[in-house]
Image 1 (cartoon, rainbow, N blue to C red):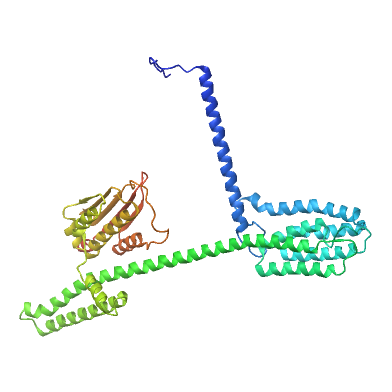
Image 2 (image 1 turned 90 degrees about the horizontal axis):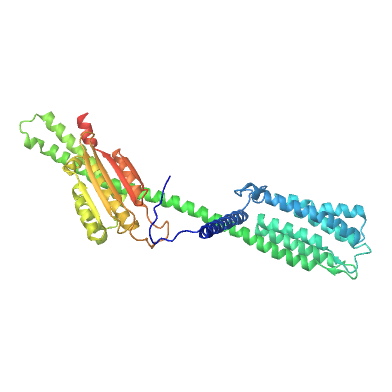
Length: 476
């Protein structure tokens, strides 16, 4: 049991005040419940509107791809309600007002209303059946005694059913089909107008105008869905192409850097093989020939790699000052773990708070494997660039350590959340996306592992394990 001591000067809570507090809590709960119900209702309406805009495949019912079952059954329910309501009304009006025989009235009522059920899946055949039944009904009504002073050739109940049919057509068919249906409806009204009985109210123009309005509205809704679907497909294709281009560009960049690393070793092999006869006098002729063959093979391999690099560069093959400057920049020594401190200092000068933890001897250990040395530097560089771009001002910690027992370099870059909300200067999807793609490619190249992802308290983490293949091979 928990006791609360009395504090002098504190007002006691009376039962009335407690009741008022409880009442306020209940009112707030009711307000929240109403707000939640409104949100759910808006969500259902949005799903239904999206399903209406989604184009249906041939033979597929309306709203067939709606997320909820009641939404998928809604078109059949609406069509059934119209059939149940219009069928007896049509029979009664034709019998009582137009004085048509009961058998003919029943047959026309069924022929004019039941095809509305077919319009949910196949609206064009349903329209053909309804139009034929309406034309037959107009001809029969022209010979009755009660047609004078009444709407003809389309009675009001026929207009309602025909407009429902137009809505089904507009949501399913192409613009060419809708125009053809609309013109056929107008042509039927014009032809029947020449044989109109005396004293009738001609409704041919009314159905023609109302049908055109319904077709235009539903056709525009379907056109909006088609446009959104095409935009989504185009965005998907553009995203896949952008990802593919990014991957190819990053692989070409890695290939160029690897060429620089391997070319250094090939050059050393060539120099050592060529200078061996001078450094080691007294060699026999077969040994000299062997060193000469090694130098020739190394020189030939180096030439092939340079030709491959020329193909990969591409943009600098036309010469000129810019190309020469770019080529000169790519001939510069590749950075490694030893230059991470300079990279961090440059980032700090740019206004980004970064702490660096560089284990003793890690630079020398990484230098033994040029691929790991370069990959570690690039991973830190890309991670810091992402922090500056997506979380400016966030505190960042960079740690590069060396596990001598397992023979690997561990790279860890962790940043906290941005101190202020970031204002997006570019639209989503406009970036090149080189960062994480390049990290994965480099880690895959060295046979290591990469772990990236957001942190629960905010921020982001990049952790890479890069095995030193040269040390592993030496120990094996």
